[in-house]
Image (cartoon, rainbow, N blue to C red):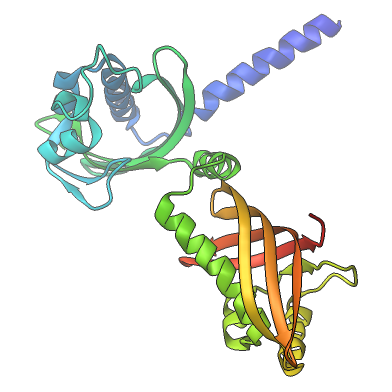
Length: 308
């Protein structure tokens, strides 16, 4: 009995998956047109899988217009389309035999059609796999524009882009992977870190307000309560009012981990202050968090201790 239930469930799932790839049934007399357009879209996918440049070109109108997956501006005409979407056909990508990165397989999971005479709008969603050896999954969505030219349905325009599910997973994957900090960016980050310290010691509230965000959390050396943004700003003002001055600031060692736009700094520090002619030196270690927002490194938190 259980086996029959499981088999029935699997069969239902397969039918549901197949139904999702089909357009809703309509009695408008356009079934043949839908079938022809679907076959045309399938032929384009297969041509990309097989690196069939002749078919890719033939299935798109000479005055094709729209957006390919990599386009940053409007793509106009078949030549521009081929250069943008099928670079391997024009020598801009590795030869088909040497290119293991291209489309390897696909599955249309959702599609529909709306006809306006001899013009049709065809939105669809497709799962994709790239690479001949290690297959990398993908997902895209598109709305193709079809026109009946010389009695045949031809793609005359399209807007194809990565599916939001895929965009989100790519962003999350990139944000979780460590990346190298180029020398220029490293210098900018370290300069931003030093500027925060100097602004705190000098009571430069205007600068601190720009680089200490609302969610900031600070754990300072010597114990005491954790501080939020308001307490950090007040602490800087109170230090400046004591009349003490920063006379020396060094960071003997700083190691950086970078994930997306978030940098974690592991550092040792030394600062020397002077008040009434007397100098005091403090050393310790710290972990500082910086996030790049609108091309500005903001200091979202830190944890300092006086250990060596």
